[in-house]
Amino acid sequence: MFYHFPFFATQLSFDEIYIDEVFKEKLIRNFSNPKMHHAYILHSNHLDTAIPIAKACSCLLFCQKRISNNPCNECHACKKIKQNIHPDIHFTFPTVSLKSGKAPISDDFIAKWRSFLSSYTYFTPNQWMDEIVEANKQGNITHAECKKISSKLGLKAFEGTYKISIIYQAELMGDGSNRLLKLIEEPPEKTIFFLLVKDINALLPTIISRCQLLKIPLPKNEQLAHILTNYCDVPTESAEKLAWQSKGIISTALKMFSEGQDEIVDIAIKWLRRCYSFDLQSIGKMVDDLNTLGRQKVSQFLTQLIDIFHLSFQHMHQNLHIEHPNFAFIQNFSKILDPEKIDKIQKSINQTAYQVKRNAHLKIALFGLFLEINNQLKLKT
Ligand SMILES: [Zn+2]
Image 1 (tube, rainbow, N blue to C red):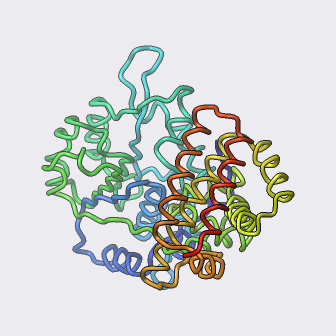
Image 2 (cartoon, rainbow, N blue to C red; image 1 turned 135 degrees about the vertical axis):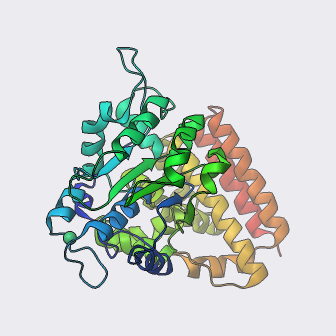
């Protein structure tokens, strides 16, 4: 499922995209140094913040009116980068076969790519694939594209400053990246490479050794909640839950929001309260409601239950303050649990999850789980 946050497209400043403070300082220091390195790997397991970071770094290099280390967002260069049409920024990204049978290059898809970037700031490689193909297909960066990168970077810069090559999912170049080795090692003057990499192990070691590796950190829960509230129009209460549920991954949080998953934590907690009080009438209503929501939501609900027991276990053992929107509940809940109970309940939840996947009767499976949890909670610890 897709979500749409068009207002995101205007963001370029480091203050407006999510970025860890220490990482931000590192980038600003780096791109303010005339002797900076010329080839970077921006690595993250989700790659959802890589494009805005690469664009913000490009702005730092191109902006004609930097304001306290941030791009101005208004000069000619910043405007063109915002619109993804700066003539000296060359985008390379995964593509799929063309109907003509000719080897595809990024320019064949550039209009779609620009329009995609202007609609989505934080996205994953799968979402880009969904945009250009109907079925679940793997994209590729062809040898023809690698050749094209060398020829483009061999040209003079249009605007007379830097030339930047942003290669999204650079690991997909495969052995085609051999063609870029020499260029990355001895690039033409003022040429900068940003290799945006999800699977670092798939990148040729000879490429890795020629680049400076920058690992993009995940935001802390409160940072992510701040971004969701301030830049994605997510209500504060939901943002806190989503930040926790998504384990700090922005694209996951946005996807969960678009699917209404922020409500699932509330449902899970309400369910556990009803299990404890053996409120049959209320549980009957909840089982009906969950049944109406369908199997996918029920699976998400069961995952939430597992997480709550996992956190309670952690709290019991380490007495830690856990970053969770319902910390007070977990604190109290863990008082009536012990490791054996948690183990048994988690096994029951897993078994229910398995039944749900195997098309078992949802209402019967959920009611069975309710009885099992109630039974365990009532046993003396
Ligand atoms: Zn500017």
